[in-house]
Length: 66
Image (tube, helix red, strand yellow):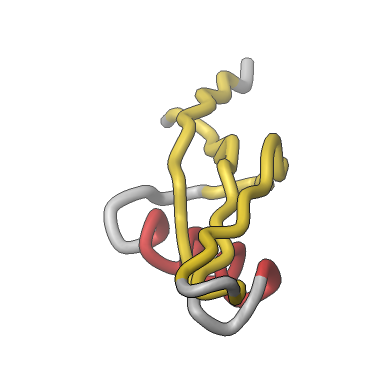
């Protein structure tokens, strides 16, 4: 029987949404094994001085439990 667990994280990047997703998954992989997938649940842009300064994503990370 396989059992999976999902956690939610928020990741940000000054480069864009793609980088925020990659960095979030990489950081989660430092402490989680068996990551199976990630779902982008939400996106946000932080604006400073009238310009986009940071792109943030809320990720649901799914991993298999041993």
